[in-house]
Length: 364
Ligand SMILES: Cc1cc2nc3c(=O)[nH]c(=O)nc-3n(C[C@H](O)[C@H](O)[C@H](O)COP(=O)(O)O)c2cc1C
Image (cartoon, rainbow, N blue to C red; front, side, top):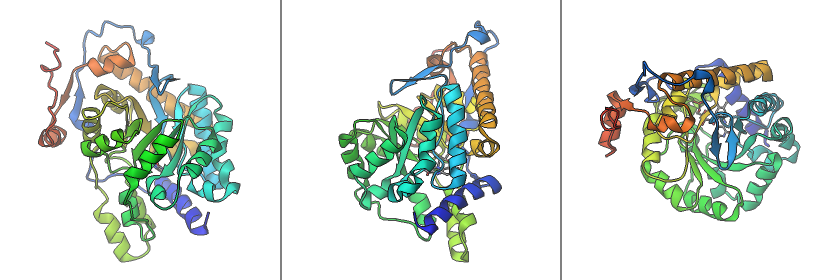
């Protein structure tokens, strides 16, 4: 890894820890998604079953810690803490982009620590879609997979970040075709994920058609990579360029509906999910799995125990939300009435999606 790339990775962690690199004016849209409180839940809270299956793997709850890092000493600690926590809680995690370690074998251990600390957890390898356009192929992908004995591969799309980054790679021509080639050649499932921009119905359909097995919408409303680049930029012009796109993207709740209503493959919800209630709402909108990144960063710095506590708290929030809507199992959430209003409803109806109302869910 070049010194520049290593510095960039360290910058991302530092900025996400110290600055508010979160959407400012934009929101996830989940504030306009309402689960209807049930005064007569008729279930026992303690008997609620949160387990879920994704790609044949049994999760204690449909939650993963989303891709963040690798490549530096600090990243090793972060990956280690996340891995220990998800192993203990029977969840899953993604590692950050493995490009650095594909280019410099010495760095493989900063990612491999995840499998060492989580021998049984669901682990997701990570490479950039744009790297596939710039020479990466099945050989590099297999290296990334083997490095952590991955259960699946995430190919991340980050056009926004590359565009506002002075050193960014902005040629994405042919990226879909390349993703399709990898999907055909790899014997493990591929998840294509955005990183804060969201994925629209049109793109979801294209990704499904080339053999992608799941889509992680990575919508707007949480971590903003334009914000990260804003804090990294040294020149005024770069700073202004990044600031202009701070809140760019499709809100997570909107992207989630666009994807779930368009394709049959499982959809992962991510981008600004912050509580167990957000997770419950995403599952009610038919997400198969929920992925959260930034809120765990702080916990990981304090170690595996703190990371585990943070995750356990989130799971309890999900359990309470399920209790309050009378959902005994994760699958029941997709059947509970959901009301969508405000900008989220307006956005969806403008895009031709029918917004469910209390009545249309057959609640009366
Ligand atoms: C510090 C940091 C580093 C990240 N690095 C990567 C990465 O290398 N690869 C990737 O696919 N996503 C990366 N992401 C994006 C996350 O996986 C996720 O899509 C995004 O942060 C939105 O989720 P959040 O709002 O819960 O943070 C990173 C996020 C953070 C906070």
